[in-house]
Image (cartoon, rainbow, N blue to C red; front, side):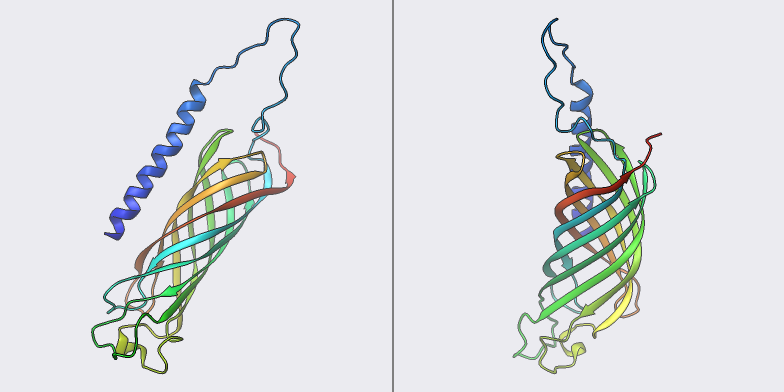
Length: 229
């Protein structure tokens, strides 16, 4: 189920961006009649992807399993923040931090007094980002981040051992984020971003578990421009 959700969203994202690029490719430039002035430049005329920094902040969602023996995953909400140093129009190096918060279902051996306890997950990752497609309207980004995660699983258990409710203990763990984003330009500096991801964590030390995450928010481009080659 998790893989199918990620696949469907990925296909929808690719279709949306391809549609934007196709529409832009069919657009025609009409010259004004002699003697008439040209209209002012369009808001997206200056989009060249040549600012040195991109700062992103958005609201996030994650479907998360708080333990190996829970009946159902937790639907968590939170934040997603990122800073990217652009090396050129294609490549960048990003640092990403995100946090997800909510309540979770529990396992079969749960004490009757434990219902929907609070859980949280924090990720601190970084790595390369690649701009696969781009025009003045939109761009498609791909990224592969690696780092660590912290899981807060015991706060709502009132002293009950986490194993009794099918949860992990509070811990740090290796983590990776694989995915990308669709960037819809509103101006040369301001961008609306949709970012679906697969997040992989190794809580419990039994191998990586894949979860689905997505965020929406705003990118702001800043810093000195670099030369476009």
